[in-house]
Image 1 (cartoon, rainbow, N blue to C red):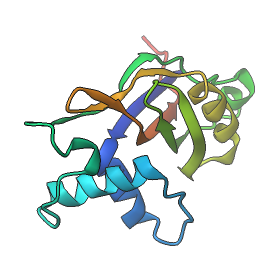
Image 2: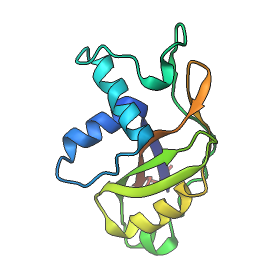
Image 3: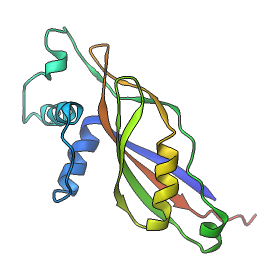
Length: 152
């Protein structure tokens, strides 16, 4: 049994998610808009400094850092039925490091969605920072559920 978690954090993750899922409704709160502005600025499309960084010399974006990240439950029933798949989840890491607004962005196997959501809601982060100040940001994580060969 193997459950892996890969990350596309911060500006690029939100930007790519919006391009890949243009028909999905996405909540645009202050941190989402700020993150999208950062993505556009990093592509050279927008040369504006985000409002949260104005007046801060050399303000740099630091993505959130996972502190506690338990793996989703890969139940015996799912493994016994040889269920594998990938679940991409979008969520917000607040300025205090709390996970909110958890939603499935895409999934290859719906039976893996619930264990993934339950695990991610328990995750804890050191928040993202802009110019040394904590800020909220949107994160997209991909959780892979794969059966490993136990031969050998």
